[in-house]
Length: 134
Image (cartoon, rainbow, N blue to C red; front, side, top):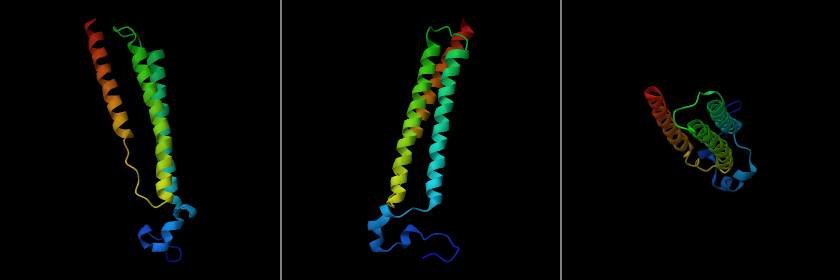
């Protein structure tokens, strides 16, 4: 039980009978709002990746390798779709975990995005070096 005006009780303070009704209770709103802010951050990341992909295709001068702009722009767009879709799935999984007082699910998306961006950066570095030699 929380003191008047104090923080809500910890999950550890719940009694043995409280386990069955986690889905029926509203969780502490701070956790839900934090989950929502994280989801919105994934959407901002997705929009940034998509804008970068469009900018590469439309604004960057041609590279010595034919079709390189299309490949880079396409890969950025794919990362944008992955980021948005995974953000939605992650938001739902975390929301479910919070509502049922379960541990948060593991997160793989940062590894996927990080790997994709490293590959794109290396590809871009090669293109810059090739442009300097041309």
